[in-house]
Length: 226
Image (cartoon, rainbow, N blue to C red; front, top):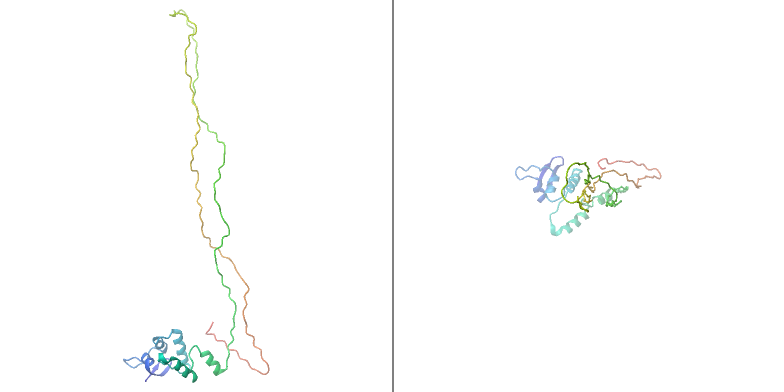
């Protein structure tokens, strides 16, 4: 059994694992606080802070290390008026007669999900139109020039049916069609961020105190809780 002093809390009497956690072996001085000692014994930070607050309020803290007889220890302590964090509210109600009324209200929560609002189709249509090209072409023409000649003798006989042939040519235009790319269309999607205003009707509860007879009512607000 070891006696020591914890800063802020005051004197404390501890035995077993709790004493070992609270008192340092080197100098016998008190540890930093009861919360740290209880956390070292495996309690959560919330539970350890709660029990330190109970000790600061003048109550006693009893720890039992007996895994095989936990239920027996719990029954014995409970029968003598002891309580833990889970049963603290019930114990206070039994001692002080106070009762709690929960005041609730509804809250709005927005949930988003993607929905299809439309569809865009991109397709190509074939349009027929007439186009005219101006193409310069060359053709041959026969030019006949007559020159008078006199005083010159022409050899040979005069025969009927004498002729000469001169081929006449011209350029002929042939139209050919080829496919060429005139434009490219890129189709894609992008996300646009905008704000929508949503609302709804919510209900909340309010406490109304009614008195009957000569009763004094004093209200106290706990500002440590939100």
